[in-house]
Image (cartoon, rainbow, N blue to C red):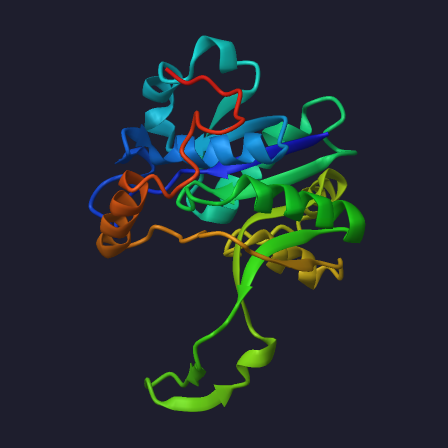
Length: 240
């Protein structure tokens, strides 16, 4: 069993609006991300959103999808929102013994093929995340903003999502109090617990939409038909 958490609980402080609901080629960004997970092999998912958006979003989920997609209220940090979504999934029969994929709604263009590859790598190695090697020269700064050192980029990767781990790992981390409510990704929690995490190189565009410039680019990219548009290809998803 493979289930998923799509994190869409941001308040839009950097963008000036809640970007997860912004439309790319006519569809809300969160739908692109949910669709990509389903096309990549995720069977059921929860969409984690701000508490005050639950009622409005419930009306946007097509009736035929309400057995596959549930809404969960987010928390004060990304990690808290993920924990809320994971707890909801762990209540499903078989989820503890299955796999949980966590994906940011702000990465709408992830390739379903890459989703499938990360799931396969997690099954083979324990846990896995989508990532890409750093091509820029990386600098570490001191507290005053001066360069402290140049880091060798050959061993550096930019972490992305989805990140896929066994349900029992999530259960153990949550039950033991080891879950870090300030962690910026799930891999950081499991690394500290000593679990093996495999890097899977992304093959498609998986940009995270964070700034107004990112949004302008994402809007253009979607309008060019270059994203994994919901409803295209072999998808069986039908959204209203």
